Image 1 (cartoon, rainbow, N blue to C red):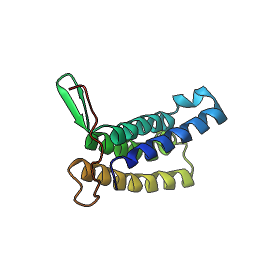
Image 2 (cartoon, rainbow, N blue to C red):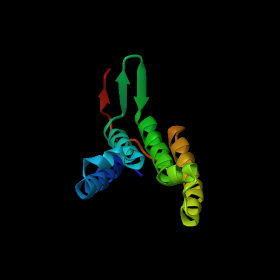
Image 3 (cartoon, rainbow, N blue to C red):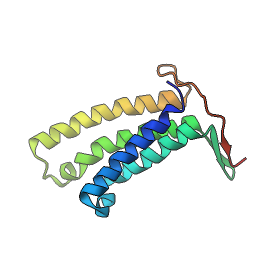
Length: 134
């Protein structure tokens, strides 16, 4: 996989958010899963567009943005069902889906950490040289 592929992932994610906004209005942005989707889309766009971003003393490489994308996707899955589970109003199917989403989230966490540390299991080749803030 190429680093620039994250641009397509981010764009696709933001198109899904736009579809939710078109269907349910701006109030949908108040939903935790939608807000996490926006953040994941933006971090994926940054991962696919920049080699690194420097903000003052902090420098974030594209691998950091790619890892953040996967970690946000990992948080997004259980966040969909968590409010009902915590409130005790979850149906049996919602509780089961919450459990399955937690297991699925673990896969996204693994992918994010692997990409952040150089990709022993998931190879992502850098092909963007744009640096911002240096």
